Amino acid sequence: MSFRGEARLWIAQRASAAVLAVCVAVHLVTIVYAVRSGLTAAEILERTRGSVAWFAFYSLFVLAVTVHAPIGLRSVLGEWLGWRGRSRDFVLLLCAAFLGWAGMRAVFGVFA
Amino acid sequence: MKVSVWRGGADGAFQSFDVPREASQTVLDVVTHIQRALDPTLAYRFACRVGMCGSCAMMVNGVPRWTCRTHVDNVVQKDELTIGPLRNLPIIRDLVTDMREFFDKWARAKGEFRGHATRKDDFAQVRPDSPPRVQADAGIECIGCAVCYAACDVVSWNPQYLGPAALNRAWTLVRDERDRAGLERLRAVAGDAGCHACHSHVSCTERCPKKLSPTAAIAGLKREVTKAALRGDL
Amino acid sequence: MRQHASYWVFVVHRVSGVALAVFLPFHFWALGNALQLEGFLQWTQQPLVKLGEWLIVVALAAHLGGGLRVLALEFLPWRDWQKSLAATAAALAVAVGLAFALAL
Image (tube, rainbow over all chains, first blue to last red; front, side, top):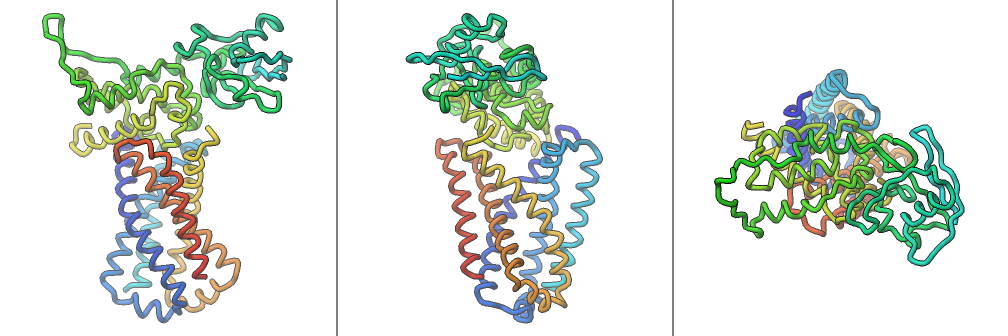
């Protein structure tokens, strides 16, 4: 990849990190609350299904993760496994696509 | 005390010497004693002996230091000391490393000043308290000793990485209002071989004997490259 | 190089990141099967699973803390207190870990 492409990846990584900082904070609070309240599956789904706000929030969450995780793994693969070049980027693109698909499937499952 | 010193090239080994402890002894004193009194074939570098030139940088108990400024009392562990050549550089012999790659990367980072004025122009008037000048001044005392380069794990993991010293120098020039290399330099320091590979371990800043902060310089480069990229100039 | 705080924060940040990246596909798959959520939630009551959940939550908090440290180092003006960012990141992870543990 060119230095321009790598600079853009870095920008995308930091931007998605900023989005995730907010999403993760909200998510942690929500999860701790749900666990403390001992909510059952039915109770959870009752609160989440049909909620446009939660649907939008978690869709944004999934999008940010789809950008952030593969770029993060890219450094690890390059530095600790010595895997660089086109094959690494191609595989990570596939991972991003899979995360996006699985993530939206989950979002639809819980919030639609 | 028992001193283990690296002998040979990359495929060499540690050799043990028995060295007498002295008062106010430095690690450079130890190496010098070994070469003069015990084994004249030991190869090592030094010059000023007083903490100004950076030539005597070596790995002492796994940590890169200026040996002339390292008191044995501060680093000896149970009467044992381990001395090796600087990490991340090819070994020529014993404690001497090949510094060419270190300086080649300095050049690749466009670490040289490019002016535009001639002798007919008036002096540039740079306010010493202007923020860019303050930032540049924070990094200009680098003497190229390669301690930060040896300390950096990303240099170990990424052979193309320009390293903290080269990037620190590039930053001091980016903040120099007289310099005209501008975008060319930003392009030279961007990407996986440049500032974007830094993960802020802060080992360079931790180990720099001049108390410089390449981490801060590299963060500055990241910001400047981002600005250029977002403007479409990169 | 080894030893100092910032280095360990980096290691935790990287390891937690990899752990989360490995965990996420399973997380998404389980949630995508939301119709069977009750049965799945029953399964998660097992102690080993609860431990795993707690580790994931701590990993998430640790990764967030480490990430905030990186963002601060890269985007905020340099100050000497940059060093204590490592401690702050660790404290955040511990705090969230405790909160989750107490809720379990």
